[in-house]
Length: 237
Image (cartoon, rainbow, N blue to C red; front, top):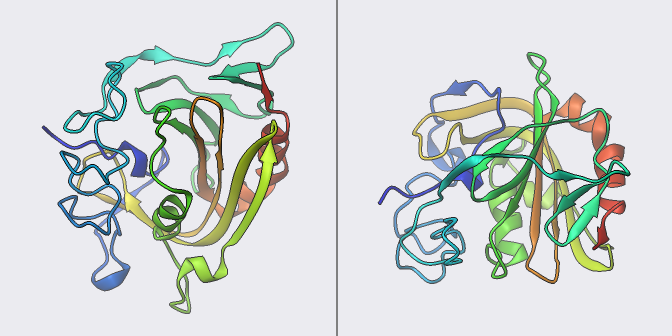
């Protein structure tokens, strides 16, 4: 079955370009059986945290692909908060919620769709088992960013351990040259300069939630306080 690469998809509105050569190429390319790639071999490899992200209720069953689901948005509460799994939270009023149709995506928000200033936040949820360890996810995200001096992005990224809603959380941020798949399962690449990543992995009683915000450096910087305020607003139901 065709592997699902939704977890690595670039934000909407991204323009594609040919993949660069050498070690700076897409770190997720060649979705084969490379054991160093947590997304590799989306089949029977039990080490692959993203295998079988289907919506059939079978959890992380190997060999399954992510199901398309009817468009859905987060449930809105009378006080303006929304429901995200076991949490409620207050999304920024400046953000536009976009319906999601992937079983791996819990929510998506558009911060800006203006040409050259695009930025999206996607919230992923993979069930109680999550999608691999924190370090593996940080390495994957940071591996999509290249630094002008050639240093590994992990060497310059800001990584913070904290808590939201009383749950352990990790927040990461970095800027650089963003190279990733443009669409799930596609060979096209997004290749954009002056981009930023602002992301968080938040644990919960029912498994971790992954908040991945990627977009133009200027836009992400303008919304950083709102992103953090949203995370700080999280409460367990």
